[in-house]
Image 1 (cartoon, rainbow, N blue to C red):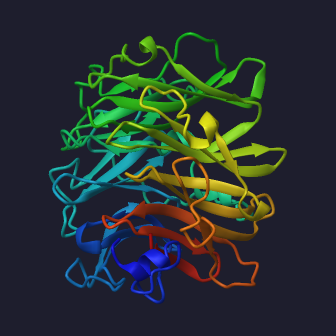
Image 2 (cartoon, rainbow, N blue to C red; image 1 turned 180 degrees about the horizontal axis):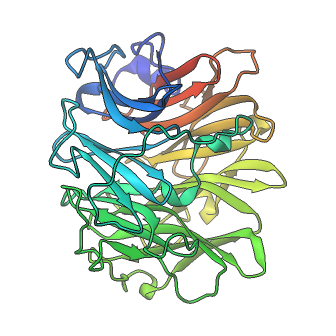
Length: 431
């Protein structure tokens, strides 16, 4: 941003958005920045769990040119954080996991479902019968939520990884192979722009993630993304036999056709780090200019959570500039910290958000945002100390839960979430 006042207040709520940087809304489950400062927010109704798409103007007001006074109701039902991905025509995909499959919808820029995709704009992929297009959309299925845990607002690793193929407009997502529900058979799937299986991927539309070179008990796909060159990068975790309490992270890279990329670690799984305790919520982002990989999540040891960031070069080696080539563990304000989303900016700075506070007791949970410099230190230009946090009612013990984070074209940071008593909110930070 060029505004000098905005630069001086980086890391604080943007007063030009909503009410002093906040827009109050029904429980948001995902957010997508659009051109001209507009924002798409997907919300879930408290009782029915029906999804709605809301478009906000740059000042946070409802865009009355969109749908019915700024809102489009969808015949979809979900209660947890989901993903919104940009389509090549200016529209977007909404995608979320269900038992044994995944639901994906496609909307045009005006909010209407794109009927060229799937059946009436919706594609339900069931892993046991993936070619069947006419699968009904699951009705209002309530997801069991543990009210005493922030962890329950996010599905565990293997179901959230998804991305857009920027070359062809296809969509990839993490799921299971046809031997579902075998827990050792994760897979990456790819759909054509019309929702059919893309059989140029491994001849089937999906590629099983089966690392070679070591023995393992369980193999879990944490995240996947498509690189600018069209190759697919996957982040996964395996349990060694006899040591189920540890986390062992690895990367694998695949060519566009689903074959193993021999140019990446000679086609073998690249083991990143063996952690003696569990890691959770891992998300991966890749900088287009040089392929630098950022992984964010959190590390749990003896019921204490620390936000974790790993920065890797395109080859998968640890970047020696960031935290001297080691994983960065952070406890903001000496409290439990969990990163849920991470983004790397072109200058190498890393923006993260998630939750702050003791998850096991679920008391006084807040939503932090932090910016780290390329060397891994907190950026003092960001709110004077490198981080900030949001809480609906300062001084109360009411919990605030994180749903999603994204960065707008002009570099501002949009975060959405909800509190247990007062509903949802969308925040915009100067950056």
